[in-house]
Amino acid sequence: MIHVRITRGTWLLPTARGLMRSPSPRGPLSALVMSWLQGGVEPEVSAARDAFELSRAGDVILDEDRQITLWTLYELHYGGFDDVDDRWEWSAACLEVRSWLEDDLEAHLVDATQEWVDSVVGGSDPVPERLFALVEAVESPPLSGYLHRHATRGQMLEFLTHRSIYTLKEADPHSWAIPRISGPAKVALVELQYDEYGAGRPARQHAAMFARTLDACGLDDGYGTYIDAVPAVSLAGNNTMSMFGLHRRLRGATVGHLAAFEATSSLPARRVAMGLRRLGFPDPAAAYFEEHIEADAVHEQLAMRNICGQLVKDYPDILESVALGTAACLYVDNRAARFLLDAWKQGGSALLPIDGLSEVVGA
Ligand SMILES: [Fe+2]
Ligand SMILES: [Fe+2]
Image (spheres, rainbow, N blue to C red):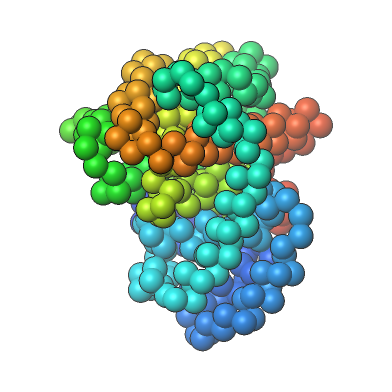
């Protein structure tokens, strides 16, 4: 049996959704914000601004301090933390810090994907075809192919650890769009999300299926257990979804992101499932990925045509936002995939190398 053991002085408690402890800080800004959340310190926005400016140089996607701070502030809108009062969700100081971090992330995404967005906005084919064409045109690092044929058991476990941060709350960020759109696109979004949430069967909820994958692989299936092990590049993908979802003005980007997410899932899911079987993990480990081979082949059509295509038909001005969401999904997911492959190529780990934070035992 293989276990990934996460240690940081004290053993992290197994957690259920909504019962995780707040993450460890990764720099001055996150240290300050965590000190607010954990109580005892009056929020001092000017001190946060100084810390924010200090950490601001460099690539925001790889910035541990900024990404963990943003992820933590967003988590207040999901399950929260068992060591943080729920009332922090609407703290003016937290929202202000969040807005600085969001401005940097959004500006970076807009800048990095401008060419791709222009190719969609300037096209003349039907919108779903333009979005599909973008997904086709953007070359992805061969992460799923590597997991299929070459990854070691330890590397597969690292991949699952990265994925655990989002997938244990799979579909939640896109659900923010439901009250923010209307008409047939809303109906289609609810239909897709209904599937993601198990179509009336709790055991088929995709997040629950992924928890069983983790468990079958000897990993902890508690929500957020591995947050301290997962580097900024993966948190950036999570934060991108939450940023889109939590801003009504970015509702087009939320569904555009969903469309890209679904359209890049089916074939990779097949490869990962085959990789899990090649490595000898037990049957339940692959079930989540096998479910997505067929489900996401359907979902990509629903998301591209019935959600994005319909929404743009009803509200033509939303096209650029939809295109940004699609392009940003491809961009951040490709950054994360490249990060994992590069780390492994150099013989290292793609998890955070701090305080013996993670060690793969028995791989
Ligand atoms: Fe799913
Ligand atoms: Fe899906």
